[in-house]
Image 1 (cartoon, rainbow, N blue to C red):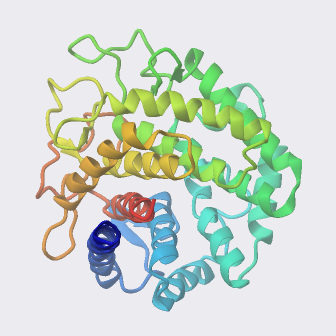
Image 2: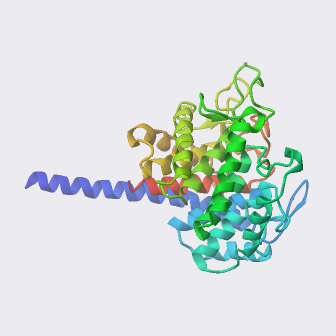
Image 3: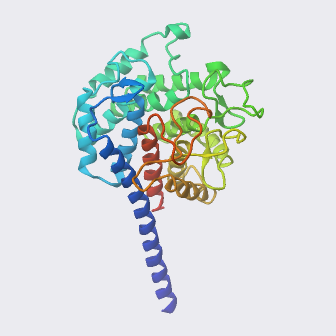
Length: 376
């Protein structure tokens, strides 16, 4: 009888601890999102960083990826209203219209698809037309190839999930085939191949593929660039059957990356701007850390990663990310836009990046998936 009571009390205490931990994560996510939605209360206004840009550019699109993720654990109608206003203003089109071929300009369509599927509002016809246009349009810069558009690894996150999501909706094999062929082109052919399978990490584009080296002689592996790919693998696998050939192909790379990234994390829970070279970049970096937490937490939940091996890394990453937030919700340690570890340096707790929207999106993705992990 005493043992039964002890067991019952242990379960109760465990439940309270889990609930408290989840609430802490949720409150942190809410606070930084409230800061953003207050600062950018009108989602239709263009951004003004150096010059005016329409608000469906990639930096803002990544924020909405995070907001839609937050909605899954904190279903507030104001999140949907804010997102719908943004989608309607841009007429549910890619930045630049249906003939946009730059992956950055297609990123917004991820949210168009998610909101449409969730609420039934809006239209996905412009997205479908955009993808169909690109699939048959030769890229003159790539010698007329159809699959030579993703010339930097960030593009894998910006565009690949759009194609895979459209495949999941329509069951039209063309979209998945194009996504996978484009992915393989960047992985295996661009610059001789941007993925170093032996080390499980990605070079950002052909300019950084070996023999390019950092000053200390190590390979240049940019944290956020690898984070973009890692998140894209998750966002695509979510849409696919685990039995499918495409899922298994992406899972293989996800596992290679996971193993490599685990050894790149620092004791304080952060990953730095350079994954393997700390001489010039010794400080924490938030966006890569958030994206790696997003992927690892999802991997554990879906049985791809061992809890005992990867859960400590997730716990440390959460503690690190929580320390990034200022009292008003502003996020520190956010590297500005760029293409390598040197961009936007020095990155500090108080430094203000050129754009802060994508950083908030990464943060929300990571915290949302970690929140879900608390119930496992």
